Image (tube, rainbow, N blue to C red):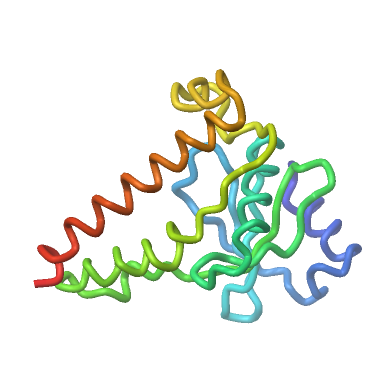
Length: 168
């Protein structure tokens, strides 16, 4: 989808101010097209285009975890789920010196992973062709929640066990 078309939609919807025309493409996405909307010299919003199922899942994630300060804030979701707009959030990994990886991991556990919310209904997960997704989809919502809970618990326990070694 043409980025200029998206910008026009966002101007008309009142999401972007008309003077926000400077864009910076971001690289590194697996299948998405991502640009940053600049407010003068400051990055302000991210426009991310992807498969509608993935856009819907990412928007739902940002909406569900809106209370987590480390995550971007959802600004707008295209009604057809062609793209999503969220606030630009600079990466925080670079704020930690090499000796403070434990601090970074503790922050990740306490401020993100510990906020995990169980999904109570049928969902379509991100990349439908991934092996892990087939395992989740094959079961009931309760089974999927159990698998995701185990994953989050395992990650949390690993980080907590490794933390003392990393802090010193």
